[in-house]
Length: 234
Image 1 (cartoon, rainbow, N blue to C red):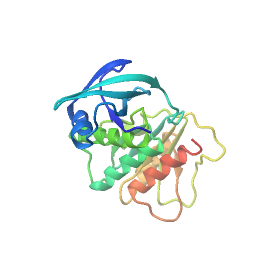
Image 2 (image 1 turned 30 degrees about the horizontal axis):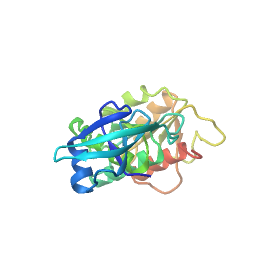
Image 3 (image 1 turned 180 degrees about the horizontal axis):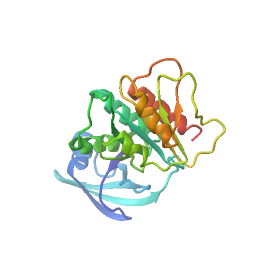
Image 4 (image 1 turned 90 degrees about the vertical axis):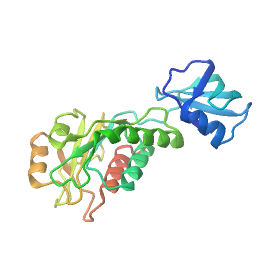
């Protein structure tokens, strides 16, 4: 696979001018030259094979040669609503959620949240989604919502299967085994887990409880495991 670069502009066959940070990365950091082949995508599901025509300090002239739509997406929504882990563990979580196929990430505010989500960080998280998509080959970007409370999230996700992950369970009420999901949503708690009141609110809203076993998983481990489980076989 040729090196991949992102643009937020509309793409079509023919000449295209790439500018901004991606042009700097292509020409100055990676030192591509005229004649080299690259792939350009903008998140609409397709990707364009392109040839570099000319390079200047501020922009790169490309010829977009053909458009393809490789099948790299899970064919149903995978929504992860999660309390935030600390520092670089969140960066790791977002990267891996993109890689395994999650389609939407919702930062949750819960009773025991330690790292509270801030709206101004969303653009940074979206840039991380773009970088992860460049690496893994996805052409549809994982959506990132504004931070919301658990109560809002429980009422916002009308998917086929909905699970709240909980550490204090003798058994789970839900399973993905032998099911053909049309969409899956997971609520992932903070360090210390959801409170019993929060779990009761979820079950009252027809969410199923789910445990990944007797060991306590970190937030990012639970979120990535849930998304991987939902995307199994894809």
